[in-house]
Amino acid sequence: MTYIGRFAPSPSGPLHFGSLIAALGSYFQAKSLQGKWLVRIEDLDPPREVAGAADLILRTLEAYHLHWDGEVVYQSQRHSVYQAQLDFWLNSGQAYYCQCTRKQVKAMGGYYNGTCREKMIETSDNCAIRLRMTHPVECFNDKKHGQFRVPSDLAKEDFIVKRRDGLFAYNLAVVVDDIDQGVTEIVRGADLIEPTGRQISLYHILNHPPVHYVHLPLALDKLGQKLSKQNHAPAIDINQPKPILIDAMQFLGFELNKEIKQSSVSEIIDWGIANWTIDQLPDVITEGS
Ligand code: GLU
Image 1: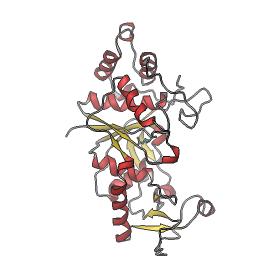
Image 2 (image 1 turned 90 degrees about the vertical axis):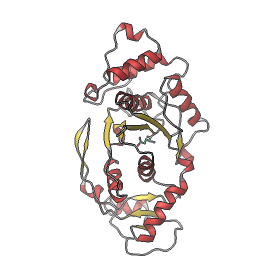
Image 3 (image 1 turned 180 degrees about the horizontal axis):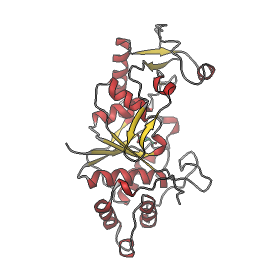
Image 4 (image 1 turned 180 degrees about the vertical axis):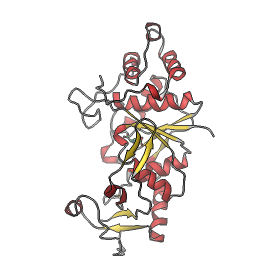
């Protein structure tokens, strides 16, 4: 079976050091296994998007010699696929409309207790859609972190698959897309290890064998915060990729000698493919540059 990996950035800003780590880790893992590496733009949340960010991300990947296979997929063009899945679940009773507010869920103890499950609410007005949790996942294996436990209440919750504001939930879109694109392994930042249990539940509910997971150590800023667009992580340089590429590869556990550091970006990337192994990843969450 061909390995298919992917990088799935949200266009809420340009690529930063943390997203470069996810791009490189997923690329090296795919290419070292003679696999394919896909790119999917997760433009699911228009209010959080920045005009031009998707194109800039793609140009930045090219500048770092991270060339993807096939066509780029945009989640904004897949609404009908997500809605068809929701309609199927609503019709079969697997999903239901829910009027509960965040405040009400908080009052339930933080986890949704199924209040609207039997209410048979007919209208979608001001309602979220929740999925009946028939396959809770309380533990899964991550190739880097080993057995990862999910709190039982979280695993059993009927979680939201479409939000009250009409946006499709990330967990739904990401699993539907990864299945449709034939992805066999997901390599991404450790910030996404928490929702992984729910995503595996979705694979079961969708009758599809779950994929493998590798969650990469997170790059933190000097304050110990995750590098993210919300925390205003600086954009990586598109014109001079080499210094940041070398920093990012060292973060991923590569030991680059002087000769490699003096090579071209494409030679460094090829060297990375030839020398990559998951075992080299640092154990602890390390401070990024
Ligand atoms: N779009 C998500 C992000 O940029 C990543 C989704 C994923 O890799 O599953 O944080």
